[in-house]
Image 1: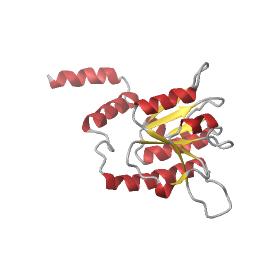
Image 2 (image 1 turned 90 degrees about the horizontal axis):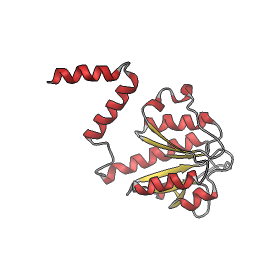
Image 3 (image 1 turned 135 degrees about the vertical axis):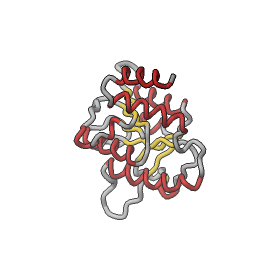
Image 4 (image 1 turned 45 degrees about the vertical axis):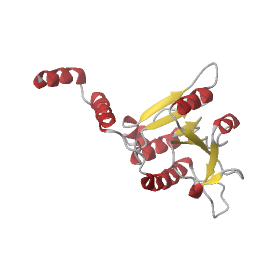
Length: 191
């Protein structure tokens, strides 16, 4: 999940909660004009269970830095935009690692982001409104893609046992007071 320059922090926080519910671990936040601060009342604790990667550069492009990271990790990126050249969510198949890119509430994704995406995707609308709220759109897209992903049996769709253990250890360290001392005592009991 990638969020570009979100204007209203509660919208980004709602997306973070949605990502946690669907098991999406990595969320990238591109900060250009707007910096993002977690709204704990909206995330309901989800922000402590996911990994937030923020991209802000005073010089250079935070967009380029984010997309370079995605490419290095083997992601194909789809910007969310209701446009004639975009593919319907019904036609997007999760046959490879995907990153969904959402723009801000006023402008959508920027032209710079659009030019870095591998494609565009939209949710077909039946009414007159052009698009859903960002958190609603994220929910619909993630639900659809996760339902489809099950039939592909991706070997790395779920975290490995080692990745789960490392993640649990990271979480424990963040919630347990004096975790470093607790670990030392625990390791002594293993000897």
